[in-house]
Length: 103
Image (cartoon, rainbow, N blue to C red; front, side, top):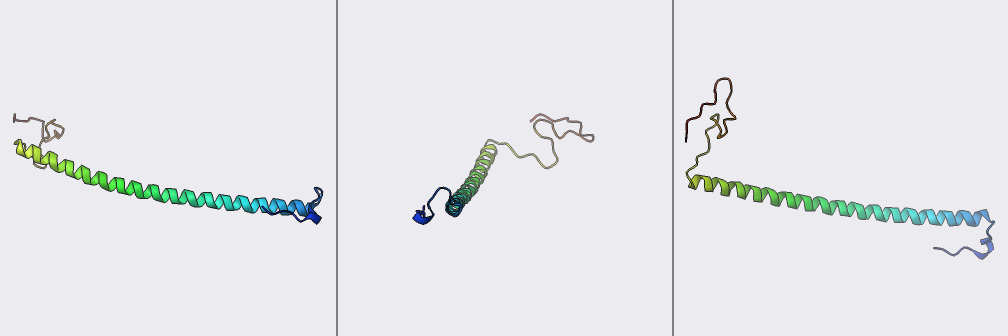
């Protein structure tokens, strides 16, 4: 902070008070800009981390799906044909009364 000019240092001097307030406002604006810049950098870092985490999650999910598919196939399970009944009969509709044959 700047030291006021001794000729204008009297407490009742409006010019001195105005200079002091102006200097304080400039300091506050500089501090606010620094905080804003720091927050923007943190947001950018968090976005990057989220993107990386999402990519990793998608890769792991894909690998897990492939593992489950391989395990099911090796155990003799076949994926249901498109439009066929699911194991829980949830595909039963007006044309399909949910009559599943035992497997």
